[in-house]
Amino acid sequence: MILAYIDLRPFIFLAGLPLFTLATVLICRLLRPHANVLKLFLIAPLIFTVAFILFLTGFGPFVGQESTQEHMMTWTIIPAPAHRDLEPEILLKFEEYPDHSIGFFSNDLAEHLKTHSEERVKVVFAVTTDYGNVRGFNAVEIGGLTDWVSPNSYYQISGDANDGSDSSSPFD
Image 1: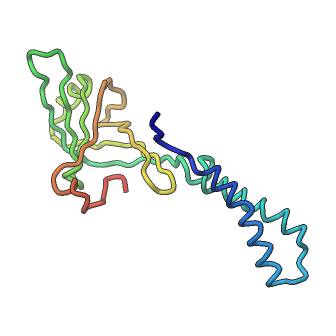
Image 2 (image 1 turned 120 degrees about the horizontal axis):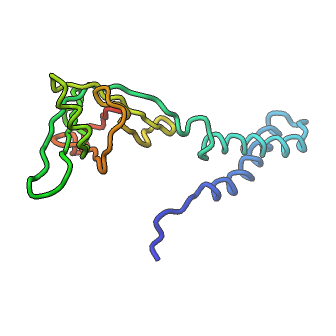
Image 3 (image 1 turned 90 degrees about the vertical axis):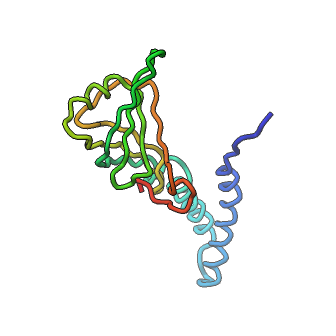
């Protein structure tokens, strides 16, 4: 059996709750020697629990934030090999981030892009973030097209941006 992932949040909560409560009681007793200890033992766990729920679980206000971003991209259609029954590959490159591109395999999208006179299109993305970090994105509109069939797509970084030195992304 391979252990791939252990969620440490329950352990953090169980260890943090008594530590936070005791630390709060000790600090309050040092600052105010006549503080009501019973109130502190009731309020401190409540504060810790609320803070824990807001910041360390998937139910906080900073998890699953949805936004839209628009990017101008250039497109190229790579035809499918003649001997195989595949859909053409559409490669969309970010103009502002030339080393970043997205590929789709779609007849619908290829036909739509062939009707455009120029090789620049506006692409609208739905971006999901957790605590400000991008969790995922999805193209929802490409050159005015909002519905297409694509059995597969990919995101790639090429060139110098792939060596890890450049951390900028179109979705940062």
